[in-house]
Image (cartoon, rainbow, N blue to C red; front, side, top):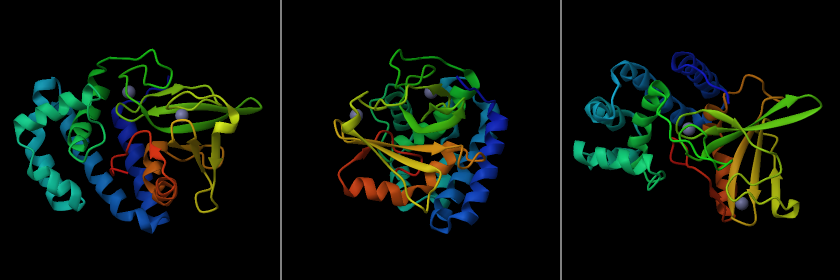
Length: 244
Ligand SMILES: [Zn+2]
Ligand SMILES: [Zn+2]
């Protein structure tokens, strides 16, 4: 399992988001919102020590979303008082709701909390985070020996763990003809994995093609691939911070 401290991780995420904004103009808007979110997470991380204190960060967070967030999140933010935020945190943690636009608010606060406190609620399921039990956001391929090793990055606490290649990360289908891989010239370091058994897809970032990629940040730029997959009836295993 790969672990990175939050400060180092944030620096890597911010630097990469800045670079990708210039490289992929179509993703500039979402990446600059992402930069604001990470900056906010950096600010509040020192004051996050207990679960109960998470809702105290509601006001600056909602203000940021109201000023710089996409319309869907701005609307969702209007409905969120402290009591409701507390419910959303609980629902996200228990995986009752990890995909609605409202769940976004819980996720942004839970992320630094989990990374800082190291609260464990791991899963024995190989396709779920061994630390917090949530589904992966993105896969990572790294050269190892003569081949490539696959790891998955947690959608919530960002931990990375090994996962055997050739299995669907959603339903663990292993039959080769049920699984397809797609690549495009525009996103050379991306591979889209699709499963015909569960109709779920996941992006995988190939670090051999771009060693500087930060998978959970690069994944935000893959919108054209998401549209392609979703138009064909596939669903993403876990929506990203942009709600895609
Ligand atoms: Zn996790
Ligand atoms: Zn599957």
